[in-house]
Image 1 (cartoon, rainbow, N blue to C red):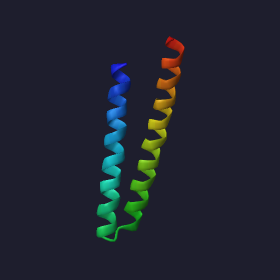
Image 2 (image 1 turned 60 degrees about the vertical axis):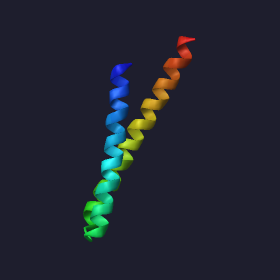
Image 3 (image 1 turned 180 degrees about the vertical axis):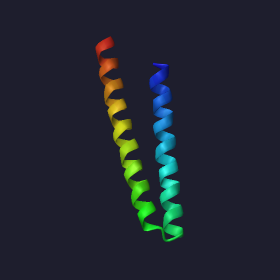
Length: 63
């Protein structure tokens, strides 16, 4: 359980840093960098959703 909480924190940090990076890229007119940060944010969001699904299923099976 602790590992999954740590993963969730890591995914949240990845999403937040990707958003900050995309804003930085927009302010500096680095459009390729914006694309890369959007892709990484989408990847972290996908992993986070998979983790949430896994946690929901494991909590359902416990009862």
